[in-house]
Length: 71
Image (cartoon, rainbow, N blue to C red):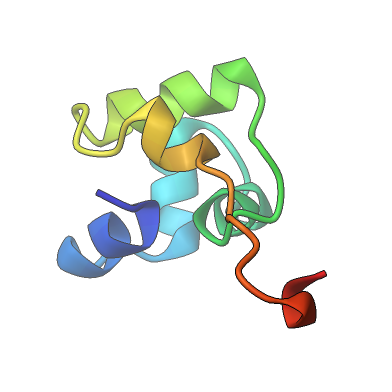
């Protein structure tokens, strides 16, 4: 499950979820949108806060390039 889906399904704001994880809302945003790969500590905090519904693999999947527009 993606972090975005988890947040939507549980009606959690970035700030509320960040407080559960002990990280800032911008950190949650970057993890949710795949802007960067979170630190090990943040990855584990997200997995713990979601009771494993969001896995480390869900958070670190890379986007496969499908066209020249993505380059």
